[in-house]
Amino acid sequence: MREVPLKRVCELFRKPCNQDSIAYITELINEILDEPIAVIDKELNHKYIEWKTYDFFTLLRPVQMGSESIKLRINPEYLTITQAFVVNPYLEF
Image (cartoon, rainbow, N blue to C red; front, side):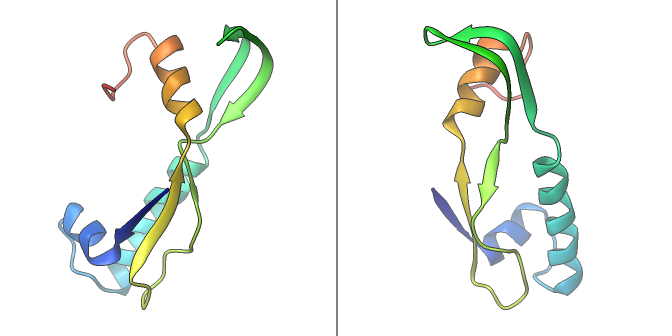
């Protein structure tokens, strides 16, 4: 689980911490959450996966102006699956 200060998130995107920036960041987060990866007919850690989707993270607290931070839970299974099955992942772990 991670808690990232909202001010730091805005800095990462080189945006001021205002309502427009929060809307932009929320849109990006929703896009990530709308694009899970699917595992079909694979074996991982000696378990057969017939069909299952995995999200990169779960947002635990809504992103909104007035909040001090974004709270999320990163899914370690997503990272493991990316390493095991993606030929050229964009992220190196």
